[in-house]
Length: 282
Image 1 (cartoon, rainbow, N blue to C red):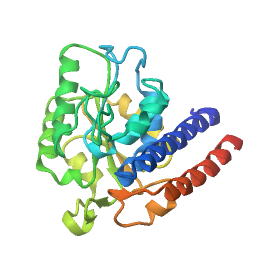
Image 2 (cartoon, rainbow, N blue to C red):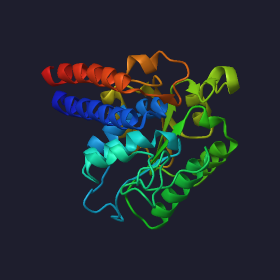
Image 3 (cartoon, helix red, strand yellow):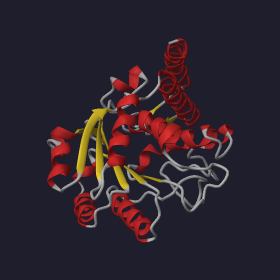
Image 4 (tube, rainbow, N blue to C red):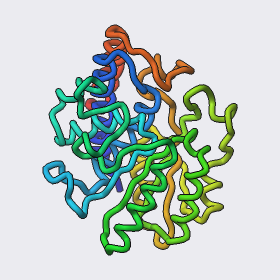
């Protein structure tokens, strides 16, 4: 049973991730706000509780791996890594600037704690399957976590990887689909409707769950259930809101990549700080 204290801890981490991410966007003046903020609660569960990692030894061979195929969400991962102690928080202010180690999209050759470089959308699925298969062949007990976007799932490469993962029974692979219903230039349903995503994965012989992607307790329980499955890969479809946590971004259709003025950053931080106070006092 997940304790109230542990839930509070994950919710606090999620709000801190959002605040650090917004500080970085505000300092830069723009960024992929929508898709970065929508996966934060999942990152708080993974980095706060679930993943077996060691910030002092980021290349530890038996660590759990995180592959964010929707690489434009990288800034939220950078904030998670900094808060866990992989590198100083101040480094977040160099996001996407000349000479930075924190590019707009994830690059394992630049950023400590990033397990895999992001390629074109869909490629992360194949990479995650390869990593999970390699670990299984090496008889390691670690997990590979993959994050996909719902618009990204329009890529055929995703489903080739999904098919093969089931074929080789990758029960050490847990995938999250960030189902925030929007993509670069509109709503997913209007561009290339994905229909019922959970059912699609089930038809490929995956263990599939669907949860509230803003509820850390639901996400945690879903990961625990996924870990208990044997002989098949798992997917957790996250019902999220693009730009989650900052009401202005949540209510903006074109929030995939947007400008963030100093005033907007302060507005977002004040909103998040109020939420943090409520969580701490709960």
